[in-house]
Picture 1 (cartoon, helix red, strand yellow):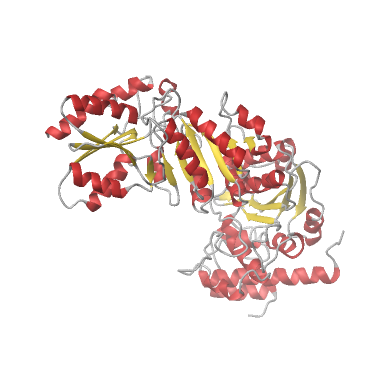
Picture 2 (spheres, rainbow over the protein chains, first blue to last red):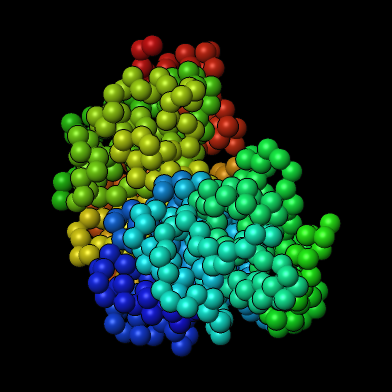
Length: 307
Length: 277
């Protein structure tokens, strides 16, 4: 997914001279072409994320579209107040991009696990939060992000993720994409965990459970209409996110459901159960540990339907 | 170079008295306003806004204007007063300082005409100023970027990150002015985080540095008229000042960071300034 994002940004920058890319010393093997092609619009600010976000704000005030690029929590949590006071309060055209959302960096450890970012970025007024699930969404979301005037948080995956879509998607910020239609339950996911959810749907089908599947690629503004329709149709909503169980996709969907539902529905959030990983593991190993393997997701969905 | 002297000097001195009186009066109305921090930068603001900054009060967003950022956002009242003096907005707006529903709070707000950036948390102004200065390089613009900072703000690591970057990229259109009044929120700098040798720190960061008396119009004028201090380097003007300058019971006191003039103190302040109430 990282390659898809970087290629898209390169292509967009060829056509749009307002784009400036700042990196906090990340992008080895990825950003060299951009740096060579656009030396006047590429700055490695060094390992200094607070300054990167401040510079981005100053540049955006002068009319530039500025990308701050780094990995994990570095361009978000490390510089949260600059994002709040400078970027969001002034409603600036700054695009905060992380590579390696969720547990992508697995064995690198908790410092590199970005697992509270969606909740925190979502809490900031003026911020749009996107989390594409595969290369098709990554490209479309990058294009939409550049076109949108205002702050955007873009949570990119890492590498090797399998595609969920089969072809380019009709993408619009704030409008979710339905991938499968089923009548027994609706599973809503955000980000590259979607592939495991897709496989879980296949397992569920073998058990006779037909699920609707929705990619909620934009967490803010959330597609309340799609959630409402899904609740009405299947009466069972399950959210799956590679993120702490608190405040992210599950929280956002719960907020919508709590306000719109007049009748009882079944609802379950699947995610990291408000803990930090205490053991080293690959992404797949950690996802299995937190019941987000295809089988783990299928088991949870089955239990919810049986309850 | 025009030197501030004679009639102009007298004029600036009169403006300084008027602004100090306004700081005390508005703080009295609003019952707050970090007046010690406002009073220490009065002369700096006068030379900037009456002589140095290329700005147009009738067109605050003029694209070729010099950019001015107040990084010590708690001194917002001081800047509001000089912006009103220069005609960016009507003077009677000042009476709304700290009043519910107005835009004029303690910490400077970009919602007020003439203000580039809202600040209030320290360590934000310089990085944003660096971004504006970098834009000149990218887009081949001529404007300059001035950022007025407190000394306590230099405890923040983000400023040092920005200082490194500005030197690395030779941002000679960037001017950091430090209102070095020696007192931060909970005591004297030297007892909390001693910044000295401050000028040497900038020199070692590849900035060009000049130390001046921040209450002396000629010295301020001379420093700001001769920018950049050195070609290819960002400039730092360390302006030695007194917190609460000009009002004897506020001068060089920690309390002046927090207090406002009550009715009796306002009368006393006017008397000291020789301004008629």
